[in-house]
Length: 43
Image (cartoon, rainbow, N blue to C red; front, side, top):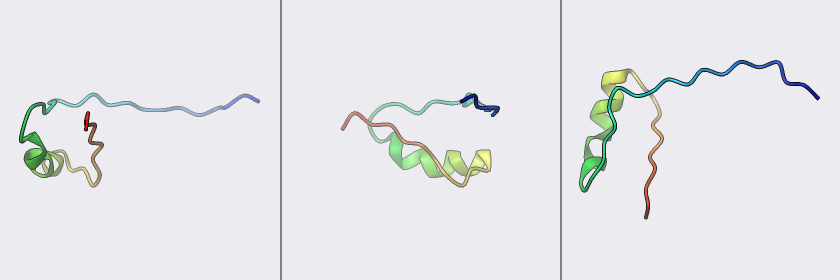
């Protein structure tokens, strides 16, 4: 079966890393006009 789909991947302009950065996600998501965010954590 062959899929005829196209995908778009947009690189973020920023990457938040380090202790306490989770507190800033909402503000940055709003700046991008995002309604959802993907958070990746090691814990």
